[in-house]
Length: 232
Image (cartoon, rainbow, N blue to C red):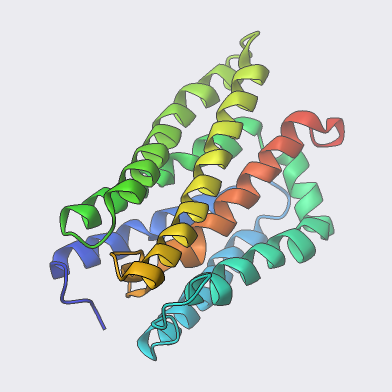
């Protein structure tokens, strides 16, 4: 199940760390009238990642294709689920109105997990370009989220503009990372060079299966919270 290309303890630590994004997202509903949604959120992600694990075990992501199989089978469907189904539900609209902007921002602290890209590069499992761009971008977004959230909580005069700049940076980071992953896959197919195929391995397949779609949806929700008066 676990890849033998990297020490087992790193895979285990990664799995433990991956629990935090799910709990943080679920806890967004804790202070709303829809607190029961918290348990449903945890259940949804547990089932979803279990299915991703099974798919990885049976090699459904192993074929190198363009776009990568894992993006076709997980990233795109999850993003469509968020944008077409979740965003049009009454519970989402009510929850977004009640969730504080500062919480939507500081939740991105979970992107410290992006340091995994740099770790995998250290074991020669990812190209340097995506490791540094994705890793540094995620870490920067994660740490800066705390300062931006604090400015929002303290109602600083520049808080709204700062939040917009931060949110734009964080969204561009994940879009650039996803695009780069596809470009590196094309290069890998054309030249046989190292691509991002290791991200199809368990448990690191959770990154493309969960992160791009979820992070994009969080950023879109944050833009709605900042720019749309009905969610203020």
